[in-house]
Length: 124
Image (tube, rainbow, N blue to C red; front, top):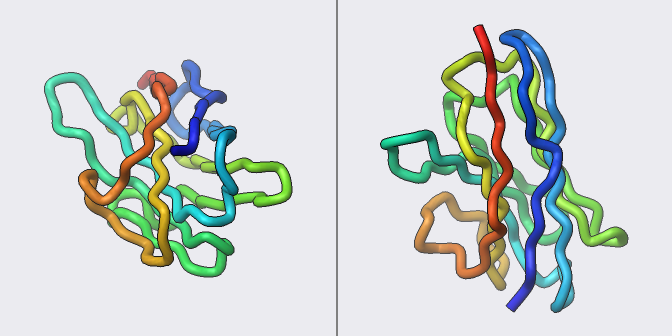
């Protein structure tokens, strides 16, 4: 099991940017594909982005393509999410997730390890 701690959330105006970080510990981070999910009030947790163990392959939800960028630094056990052109629809708790293995997957049930989440609020 890998432990995940998110940070970087906050309040930002529409059109602004934030960078989320996910710090991993407990196991060899480079053995895990990782991703970001989000959950808005009264909604299901949804996929945002995912990245392969080495960082060479990524996937994005359609609603964030061109605005968000996922990356990772295995030497520092970090996963990042750069978020630009934020809008109120991006308001949610953002979760970091990890799964042992090669495949870059988009389903919630594909991920075993989760962080506690960080709140992102975008004002209009």
